[in-house]
Image: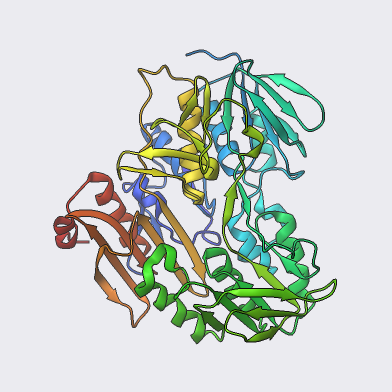
Length: 63
Length: 400
């Protein structure tokens, strides 16, 4: 699976970073960085939580 | 725990996310969502921001894209209001005359706006909760009012004031408390918000109430408790919400400022509640809470859904660290935790002067909250520490 972030929507609320710090990082420039765009299946549950909890609905999972 | 079907009353954020999480947990029985609004589930935060500004259209508000929604095989009964529930017979009555016997029931009927008595039918006076409200306010702003008066400087009021100012309109923001957002942020940090609004040209009046909203059929002026009078073409009232529980009177469920649940979000056997309408003891803070935040609706919706599939032995307490954000002008305000006016507060990074900082809150040695202005990374990392239960001293010493 592949993580797709719509950076036009993302407002760096950093919720995803709290749920999955191995995948997402908001840095001091206030921008979000995807640390691993193609995580293994073992991260699907965490990633789905990121999708649901993102206040801007900026994250999608491409299969 | 096997359930033949699950009925969700309330088809907004908490209800929809609950339904989706049931499908993720491979519940394959029928799920029915009952919603009083005619619209498919939509997202509310943009209603005071991008949508009100005119930057977004309705399509962009969809909580789940239609094609994805179809995959979940949910039955929607929109434009339908639940009017009663009887716990003994498990019968749910609807305003179209229908009634259904429910197995699992999740209640997420949310809350509605308080209004100023006598202004409900006055043209030009608005509240903001739903899509239709936002459309009406947007049309009023499009008409180019000479002045917008916003009554109440909580989050909704402060965001509407910011959006109206960014549209170049003259705005007066009236708050009865000494500072905007004072109830949630305390006076010291509320004062920082006050400065931000004043710097953006808002005519902010604090510590004054509204005596009357005057006009014949249409609003003409607002009379304040200090005797001043403000001419206004549009008035937006943001003075808090009331949980939608009236329909549950006599149901057998306990109602007290929301639906009273146990620590696991269970209100009665096979009945759970989530979102703005639910009140439950959050063991993390030793406090009975009813939380009106977006993130809580998502998280509690998922928890209350899962609870319907669990036995009492399997059930887990719902112990979130409440979190919200508010966007005003170019500032992102975020608060995680549970803070009170008399908590100790220390700024750990940045400064109030640059309007970019993180402040930590401690109570009796416990680390209870973090407030950020344009510091999202810090807020989330400190939120994790609150979840881990670190002491206030440990939080202050943490390298973040």
